[in-house]
Amino acid sequence: MIPFDFDYYKPSSVPLAAEWFHLLQQQGKHPIYYAGGTEIVTWARTNDIHPGAVIDLKSVPECNVMEMQGDKLVIGSCVTLSALTAANPFPLLSETARGIADQTARNQITLGGNICGNIIYREAVLPLLLANSRIRIAGIEGIREASIHQVFSQKIRLEAGEFLVQIVTDRSDLSLPFVHIKKRQIGSVGYPLVTVAALKKDERIHTAYSGVCSFPFQSAAIDQVLNDTSLPLSARIDQAVGQLPAPLLSNVEGSAAFREFVLKQTMAEAVHTLERR
Ligand SMILES: Cc1cc2nc3c(=O)[nH]c(=O)nc-3n(C[C@H](O)[C@H](O)[C@H](O)COP(=O)(O)OP(=O)(O)OC[C@H]3O[C@@H](n4cnc5c(N)ncnc54)[C@H](O)[C@@H]3O)c2cc1C
Image (cartoon, rainbow, N blue to C red; front, side, top):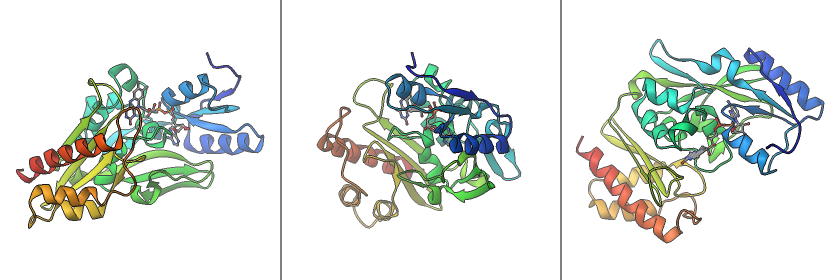
């Protein structure tokens, strides 16, 4: 049960969603955007958030598309992870989505909700970082487009009142050779100890990580070292781990030392696989 009352709005267009957010904010209702609701409902039940209003984006048509527009794949932020894996327009993204939660939860969890969520893993962002996807963002001023690298640094960086509408990816990046490896403490459902997603483009391997530090990331310094084939793979991996952007995560899923051990193995597996393709 959610132990407080809140207003529920379900706008049918992008401008209405942004306007209602703005108005509700002015009225002191502290609105939040709502997509799959898996995080919001959990946090509301545990009294960790207390929005006075939620704005459900699922009836906004632009947030529900999944189609090729010319040479670009456009995916709406409210497309669920299940729908993504079923349609499979971007195999690395499908594979990453399939590794998140279980089928029942994936029927609810949206691509936008995973990327914008507060829980630190946000695994669905990894393929978007690797493919240099672009993000369409709506706010009271209208819609703007930006590179994922401009708006996602450790977490999504939106202006107050903005929401994620669509993710745009070039066709040429959709079918590149890829690897996705997720290692958990136990079983086949759960948060990652280490997730590595990797693409091979123009004979270079590009990697991105979740579960390793307290945020998902891609690192040019790590990719530089991993692609230095003048060194043996074990030396490249030792150097790559020295380039992590933050301390290794230590939590209930695993200690920092255990994560380092798993990370090295997983990096080796990913690089070895892609070097042979
Ligand atoms: C059992 C279970 C296991 C899970 N395991 C994993 C895992 O291993 N790895 C992983 O990465 N995730 C995992 N998740 C998913 C994650 O924890 C979140 O619950 C989920 O990603 C939230 O998505 P949602 O669509 O339900 O978002 P919501 O709960 O609707 O929203 C989450 C947050 O994002 C904001 N938001 C949502 N959509 C938008 C938008 N379009 N624009 C701007 N802000 C928006 C909301 O305001 C809210 O702050 C798991 C979830 C469950 C339930």
